[in-house]
Image 1 (spheres, one colour):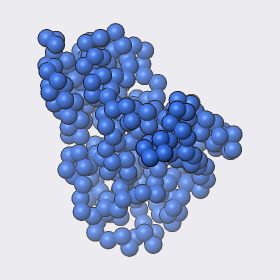
Image 2 (cartoon, helix red, strand yellow; image 1 turned 90 degrees about the horizontal axis):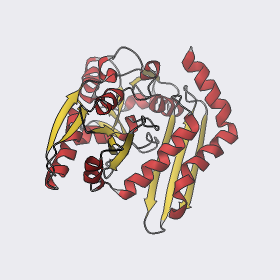
Image 3 (cartoon, rainbow, N blue to C red; image 1 turned 135 degrees about the horizontal axis):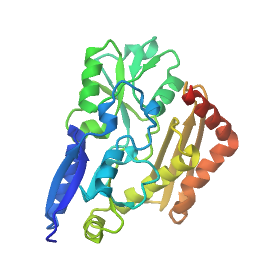
Amino acid sequence: MSKTLRIGTRDSELALWQAKTVEKQLNDLGYRTEIIAVKSQGDLVLDKPLYELGITGIFTKTLDIAMIKGEVDIAVHSMKDVPTALPQGIVQAAVLPRANVLDILVHKGSTEFLETPATIATGSLRRQAQWLHRYPQHTVVDLRGNVNTRLQKLHDNAWSGAVFAAAGLERINLKPQTYLALDWMIPAPAQGAMVVVAMENDSHALEALAQLNDIETEVCTAIERQFLRTLEGGCTAPIGALAKYDEANDEIQFHGVLLSIDGQEKLEIQRNFPINEWKKLGFHCAKEILDNGGAALMERIKTQLKK
């Protein structure tokens, strides 16, 4: 245990909270650690929507490079930001127990705007499409930056509200009183989960992190990410997925959606599966959507995003 584990993280308040959470758990097990914070391109370029930046890995690439160069040993991420295919040599080493999976709408004290034309802010195509599906009379504007920046932008603009992941606000005690829980909105695959990655040949780091892994969260997020990977094929699209373990029936409850960017088209699947079928569950659910109009919808989404 003599070697110090260097923990790479983005330098936002939320990212540092996540890194410190992992650090404390490793310290409690007797490991020595050091936190090394870096700025990612996703944090530096705030004037473009994420999908224009070629979203895959925009928040993780800087840390991937630092790991491959040997500048950090492990990296902590919000799992929903991590591409479904990791760079060669880097492996998922631990998934921590999942927090709140829901999206919430932070508003300014009144929800009367839900019945009228209004402007809602989000940087996520998934949130935009699901919001417009439910509230077609609304306008959605792009919102970028870390959690603190986005809350400030909501305060500074005449928008009626903005959509956030509940877990991020809860972790750093920024969840305001004025919010609506969006229990109808299917979250991003792996939302609310933190993942720690390491180099596949670093047995010291892998051995340490294996002790932090939560098997239930690992299984559920693997299903959701497999669903995403099968649908997307490397393209950004409005996709939501949530897998839950039902202990009473020893089964997985899965709910997945694919929407058009304007929210007018919505393809969804809800299934319960025996737990022993989990390994191909995300794949089969995605195939069912692709075979029932999803493949054509994905082509239209790709065309739209290229414009």
